[in-house]
Image 1 (tube, one colour):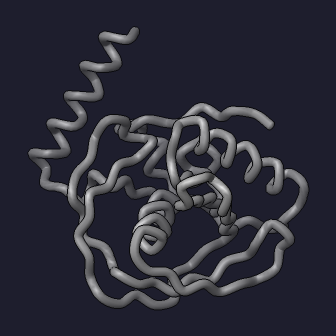
Image 2 (spheres, one colour; image 1 turned 90 degrees about the vertical axis):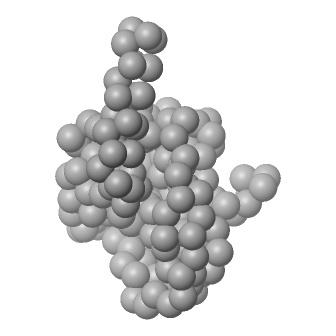
Length: 167
């Protein structure tokens, strides 16, 4: 397994729309393992392939406290959304930035697993938020784009300043 570099906002590659995975094979399974290792090391609870500069529709999520419930979603699509919740979100591609985002409270998603088998999952709470957040990445959208232009500008400036300091 390998740690993958995570793209940071406002990298334009984060706005690339991911294409469907044509075939679930060993390459995709290796990508899933590498993404999971990268997510856990970061540490985070979700990671989309777009964030590691792979523009295919693959997501890994683990919202468990002990990192024991890894879920892979290949070619995921949200079938249903209901309710509304407002929660503070962060993102591995926007380190150190957290803000409130409105999301559906419940979602129903269909995807393929690591074996290429189709499944459906109904999720609520944190898992529903995480699914929506990661699927946004696959569509080229970062959570800060839900915020005002003023906040987006402040975030870009903050990250640019941090990059200059660590360079």
